[in-house]
Amino acid sequence: MKVLVSFKSVPDPYAGLGDSASKSVINPFDEIAIEEALRIRERGEATEIVGVTIAATAADEQIRAALAMGVDRAIRIDDARALDPYAVARILRALVAKEAPQIVLMGKQAVDDDSNQVGQMLAGLLGWPQATFISKIEFLENKTRAQCTRETDGGLEIIAINLPAVVTTDLRLNEPRYVSLPGLMKARKKPIEVLTCDQLGVTVQPLTTTLSTSRPPKRAAGTRVESVEELVAKLKQEAKVL
Amino acid sequence: MAATLVLIELDRQQVKRPSLHAITLARQLGGDYALLVLGHDLDKIVATLVSYGASAVIVADDPALAEPLADRYAKVIAEAARQHGATTLLGSSSTFSKDVLPRAAALLDAPMLTDVLAIEQVNGATAYRRPINAGSMVATVKVEGNFCVLTARATAFEAPAADAAPCPIERLKLEAATLADGMQFISREQPVSDRPDLTEARVVVSGGRPLKDPETFERLVGGLADALGGAVGATRAAVDAGMAPNDYQIGQTGKVVAPELYIALGISGAIQHLAGIKDSRIIVAINKDPEAPIFQMATYGLVGDLHQIVPQLIEAIRRA
Image 1: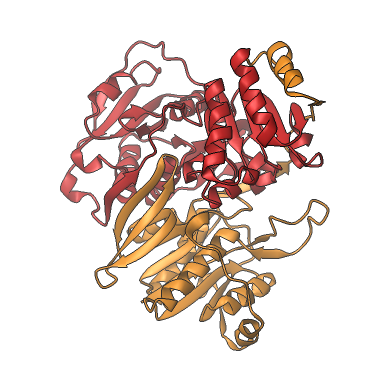
Image 2: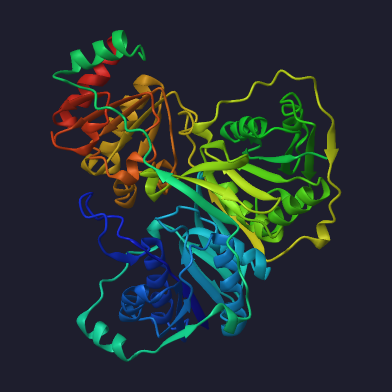
């Protein structure tokens, strides 16, 4: 079984406020998708893991990190534009046609634009089943189907999907491994293929444009109270919520 | 025909109330709007939806739609949008609509914006405001073309009044045999609780990692919530540690709440968590670390050991 795992470079979401211009990392949800692909291979259920990202050369460091985790080979689709989820999904559809994976794994959302759309859109474009926000996956019936546990607003939901399919990962699926030094050494020798949208035969124009960004109004800090009695009194008399 | 189609969400054969808030955004967009509901055995539910001022309630009622499987649902939703010549397909932000609506958008060859907070006019065109980077920034976004899909963040829009004359009900003709069959529902683990729904509650009490174990979490967080008739929430760390189920998680990747009163117990205030609570009217933080970032946004802060403070607080509220 071939696994395609797609990932995005994002500004480090755990960077302190002072170093906002700091480094990029693999989107944490995509890192979970990469880890799951590795575990599927370690269980003997996958034979090859192909990583893909759509980015300019600036993302090479994250591609090397994915290879160092254990991805077999990587593809960078060379496009530096600010693409929206639908454009990304259309590019990935073209790559899926070329690579013919049995399963596409990716994070449920990128933590920079928080859209949570690409996996579902890709599944729709391909006409493939989807399992979103998963915390568990098991393959069934000689890998023709998979059973997935999904994290939903109403608790956990278990569904079965026919393969090929698109699967998006939630936080509790696994804990990604750290990149090891031997892994990093090996990653240097692994191939990174660079493709363009032209080569994939796909033309995309972003259909959404960000006109501006701003900081939301900040909540003012309130008052410190010294005791439970004072807190209850404030909640009753000042806030009038009790 | 309707300019906007609003997808209504169900939960255990009840309308999910926050999904109605998307109607308020539909009203702001202007033009006619129709409500769309999918499921099985929907007559009672449909009867509750006719007074929201919609041009129609469109119903897709079939045993094949009893569970919200994305491949089937997206196909029916996209078909309804096409048949009605809608220009906007709208839902409220939830795991349900985030599962099915992007897929419907792809079937309609349309872009989508998640978590819309507000609309505004920029140079005569409609633009949408939505949070990015865990809510630390807000982007104003314009959409090209004449069709788009949106999810509205329920806490940013009021509940709509249901005081209009009853509207007609339209039944979508479905051929169940043509629906996709690649996904099968197996089961749902839905915690049974007498507490109010997290996204609808007037009071929310939430706990973080210092609650230690499920028993302490339930005793302190659950106990305080019950004393206040509130719902229980949790941070990612508390859910990861197995203290609370996944559907308690509040924040960037969990639920967004905006209750009258939010009480944070042992929560330091990572921006990923604050993203889900910052529109609460009153925020109370109880934490033993006086430097915890949550104190910078809490209406009332109390520094101390929650294992001592919370039982006292429960007692004081019961007396009050």
